[in-house]
Image (tube, rainbow, N blue to C red; front, side):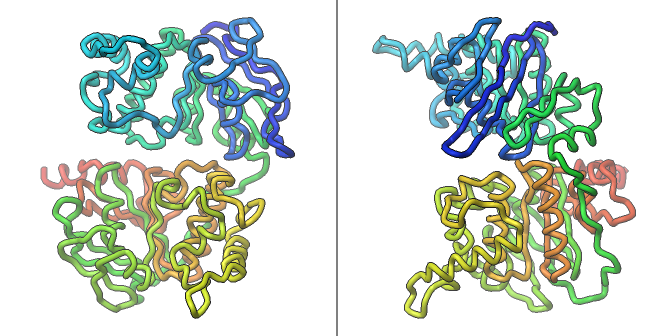
Length: 506
């Protein structure tokens, strides 16, 4: 790794009206290094990346590329200068081939009437050979999310990319897929490509990156060699305050003999899950673990009517019933918080108040069915205060909020119908560590208030730190239950991978 910076930002500032998104930020990227950019949501990471990619122009400051001051006039100009940005949200055309996606920009610029498909496939195969054995002829819609991410990287490499920016690249990947991506990153690093790596996941930063730069509230805080600091050091610099424990105290004296808040018996959908049975006890947070694709989310969706299970029984407070639709589930008091916050959890273009009331608009309507705007705002105000929602106005769109506050709006929407049970799928995905602490504390308060909580999470430390018991799913079946005395990552992974069943059979 060369000590000479390939890219420098010097005293970069960016304002949007009265809002100062970046204030005098400096940053340097060396050739052949993986440099993490860390910060809470709203710290200025996205603004900084958009400036490097030419999407935004700085209000003040200089960009130095390969020792020369430059102005980057847009993403196309950035690409010509060897800068590639892979966004968290994949932007490929699903109904055309991998090869066509990789060379989309070049194809649009060509003047010939005919497409050289054979040539495209050959060139795409040469680039993909550096990364992963993906068939360049297959349509993008038929490959996995992880491979779509690799196609995005391949697009950047077609333009002789020397600087690659990866924004939360593992957010939608399984652990196996993430490991494959890390191997590709290290290979690119060996080839002299410099990578700016944005992630909220501490383990990834400490395992994959050489240096880390911290932004907070639009300001530069520090740059450290990863080898010289600890995760606790980094968290302290990220949030600028003492977080205390990352997880609130767990429930004490849970009465296993009390009538369960929720009881599920032999829930079965042959294609997704089989013979799922469990109880949710008053006052506890019940975790659901397992590998991605094991059926965790589908089980929650089956309970609340988003999937029509073939057989099985759901009991709520001792009453047995069958839910045939999500609307019925809401009326019974069971709500579901999707893992896809932006796609299904909130309506980004609607206001905070409109989002909060969305599950049951009748609650804020007059007897004649007319929306009572004052009642809607009052409902959002009450729930916003309960969740410590930080916003600039309840009439503002949810897209104006940070990821953590967007998630609070999604939870407020659940609470607006006074639920008895909340089924939560990845409740802290994509939010920063400070917001996670707030969400964890909120979930514990809800459990103490008598609301039943079932939480799916792919982060084993979160399951162990937050939950009172953990159910582990393997290939659509309940592989085992982990109690408070045996909560270790090794035990959960043994059950999730099927290793426990193999040992038992042996």
